[in-house]
Length: 396
Image 1 (tube, rainbow, N blue to C red):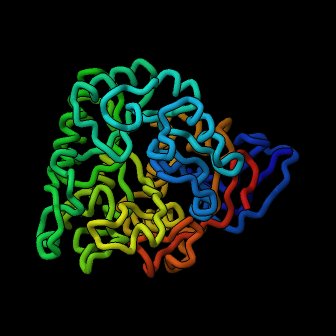
Image 2: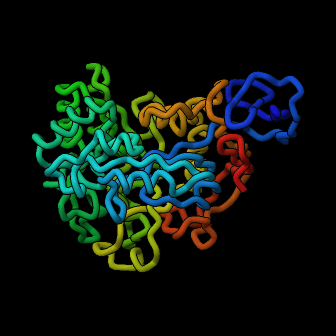
Image 3: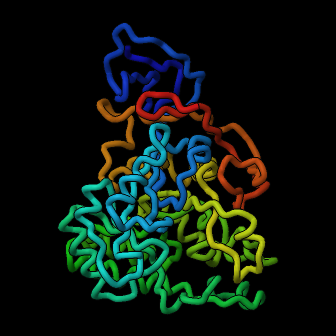
């Protein structure tokens, strides 16, 4: 039976939307009509680079697929582990494992990329770490190219940022925190884009957060390098001032930057330099966050706030709604080699119905995630997901 949503605002300007079974269709003959209630309809969000499979948080945020980082226990560097990871969320949430680029994420010996790809890995990643050895990173890129995989890299020179918990600047100085210069990001990007250019490999920097780093991405794209980059809402909404009073919920990786870098991220979203918006979902309990700043865990819980925070870019006129869902769905699908991320006929019926203007307040104590470690606690936002469909089946 073909099902037809009516009275919806479909991305692309249509006024109805049909799906049959697990796929989108144009055949509306004898369709069952369902009232969409004037909600907006969009592709399910594909969250590229989460650190935990959190089905409740993903459902609340309209996320139907995630790219799972290899930093798990055990690390995703073995085909058996990868197969298990790929089954973790089904059928409600599809998990696409990102295999470790090196064994144990140690940055020395290459992992078995081809075997891991056959087990279900959709890309290889360096995890939370930068591969310090340029020779190893060149081999990673060359091997990944031969396997048809994108390398997802952490953009931070580990030799500069080794013991740092903040970005160099007035705030870090006043707080007495160990800090690294923002150029640590640009140095990593400069090296790895040159290696990607040399090998012809595809590279995706999971987060690029500085003006210098974004300029290097622009230059590499102009040269024809197969490079893409992403960012999370924290780095266009917050700056290093937000770690004042040692706010550990704002301790992130990469750390928050200067306000000028924050503005550079916004400009890069507007001009198309940034390809992906992701949540960086990394739930951490109070035992990891209610510690002195230098000892606290990095990361934030972001899956269920991703859409609402990102819709702010549309309300401000920085980007349009179509562009937003390229960043949230179509581009992540392309990087992972998934036949998904759009509402085109024949594609998987992964979609969401949401009200972009519904107001609510982020409350860390009421989040669906395993932990509510968000730097956006008490922030008023707009945009609420009402219904989520995965493969044509509604997820409650």
